[in-house]
Image (tube, rainbow, N blue to C red; front, top):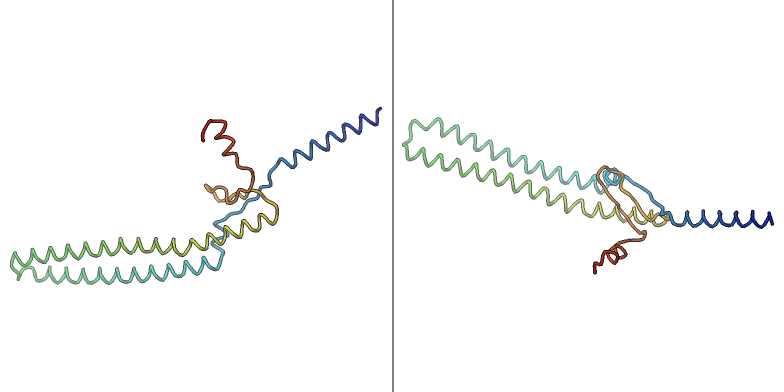
Length: 170
């Protein structure tokens, strides 16, 4: 009787522990930003962005230098020109300043667009690699350990439909 009772307790503990282990999801983590910055494709993309930025910066500097030369020349000639001529020159300088400002704004937009275009495939490649490795190792969830980041992969049970049903949401 004592052996049966001990066997029963041992079986209950075994099944209880087994159920508890099976109910737990396997979770891993990775610092995705660190991974991405170490990828050769990322380094290549950043090099391309840096070259493009240098091109825009050089053009901007050239435009500013030309504007400054024009303004200095106009200032030096102002005393020998008519009021009407000086006013036309002021309007011309203002138009040039506006053009330079628009160029700068467009350059920033183009750089941002190019960055998105270049980094999107890098990030997707990293995400796919993380998923493949996590699945091969049996992990259901992969959390991004970078501050403010979230879940990279969630193959575990999704409670959304159950919770919506409980709340009466269709």
